[in-house]
Image 1: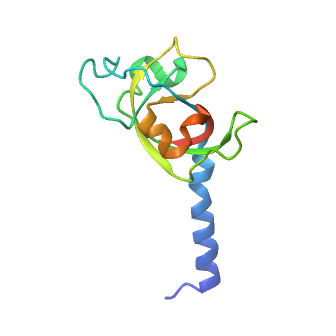
Image 2: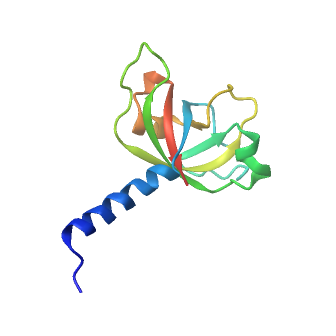
Length: 131
């Protein structure tokens, strides 16, 4: 039994929007202070595609350690730097909790991860993220 082309296209269209619904909005900030040691991995480096979280609810007592998130820049937070996004996404691994970090950001990214999604001079951008 063959599915009619128009029904197939409707199903594909619906499924392609599904991940967008699951994505959560947030803020990513550039954070170039060392990610080692970290609360999750101590003195064991985890590479460049890592992140810190500030939110106590996201941290959840460390339950988020090692979880990976797909992060995509969606726009500027600074009205003087328009269109900072590269159009790319990055997958980052949570390695640390940073309650002392500047309020407002969801994820703090090292330069290599940040520059994948945005111009570095933006320092902070709006994002969508999904695990």
